Image (cartoon, rainbow, N blue to C red; front, side, top):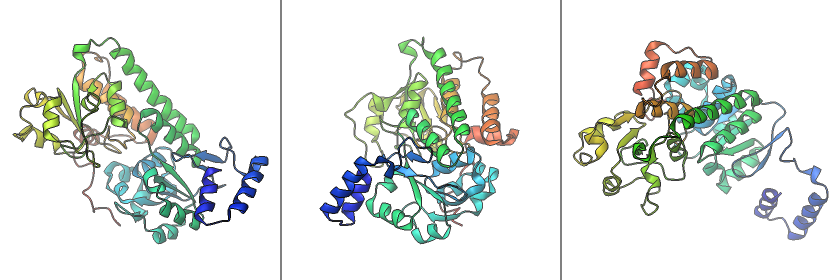
Length: 366
């Protein structure tokens, strides 16, 4: 109701009219869709969104939502995507619909005319996009159902998967993924619960660039904690990150991580060969690891493969604690179960190395 009232204020309705309608809605709540209704979802902005009766055409303006739509078996309904989705090699190998989809969003603003031309029944966007009132007004004017999502924790990520699943009629598959996600966390928690404090190593997670990391309140920090590692960004609330989450070399030297994880190919090589990074314990002990890349960059703040990142990191850093874990078997089962995709040995090697799995920026516009 508050969302509707705010919209009426933006549209400059008279206060008398607004108040009358407010009380009418309060007396007759059936006029508004209920948050628990089978045909509504509550998105990450707290909006109650009425779902279309049928969803045959889907637009994904946030890459994570495209990954989820594909996983939930609805890739053939994709008609519009953000450019980043066309850079995901494995995703496009699995689902030709991503290659054929139009691209109304490249990095920044959405081309509303191009999006409207794709005639989607529903549009998924990041909350940062949907939270822009000017963009929200344009969506509303187009009469398209749109859902804003984001997350900063594993629990919030699972909730978003459930929202998308309900919106596109794939709740059962979304629930299956979320149960698997929780099972991975619980399996690791069981074996790492008795890990002595001196074995809980300090880790720095480089996201995309060597000096870019994820803040304390983030998905990355949450899943890293599940592995028994200590994310250095959680050690000191006083350090400063820029708006792009960049951190200075002085701070990294103060943290002195014992392990470094990187999710972008080439970053590990840069760190190994940089004189600035040479004093860091992880560099001196050769504990620098490239995270795998499959559908997405495992462990990235917007990655669907968070459960696999948890298992891989635990196996890589604490192999003696999970000696019975068949990691490659786990990976094959994951993609077979959730994407109906049989990994070849060659693709397995590419995923684990992280190389050649994402096209360069600008490569997938059309």
